[in-house]
Structures are given as C-alpha cells and as structure tokens.
Image (cartoon, rainbow, N blue to C red; front, side, top):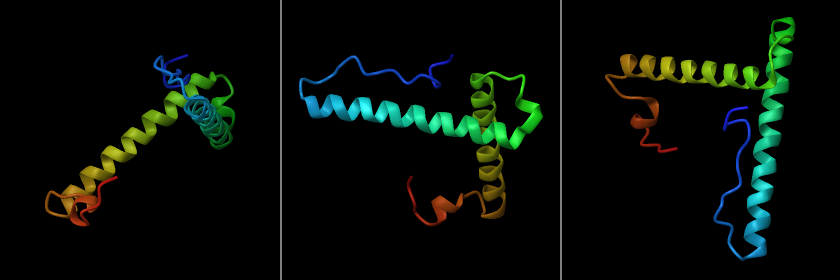
Length: 93
C-alpha cells in the first residue's frame, strides 16, 4: 500500500495526552474517509472494479480527481481571461 493509503502517525508525539488522542483520532478519521471513498468508487465502477485491490481503486480515484481539477482549472482560465473562479472571487482554500 502506498503512503496515501496508510497515514502514518507523526513521530513527534507531544507529551500532552489530549494532543496524542487528537492525532490518533485524526488518523482513524482519515482511514475511515479513505475506506468510504473506496467503497463508493467500487459501487460506481461495478464489475469493472472487482479485480482491483483497494489501493488500485483509491489510486484511480485520486488520478481521476487530479484530471478533473486540472481540466476545470484550464477551462476556468480560458473562460475568465487567465483567472480561476477562486482568483476572481479572492477565495483562498
């Protein structure tokens, strides 16, 4: 599995138990979100995903998302004189 599939705990845990708890909780939330993404993608892909591993499905989702984001940004720049909607609206994610 790649590093995106398995978020690693930071090696610099603080002595604060609350901080450690929050870091572990964040790790589990990320893993849960990744698993939901994989399940949703498998449902959408149907039989096309039956021979793929979870890692391959997750990588496929990430690649498709990258393409969509890239194409959308290119379209926005062509449409709005070289700017994206976020740039026009002065919105910073």
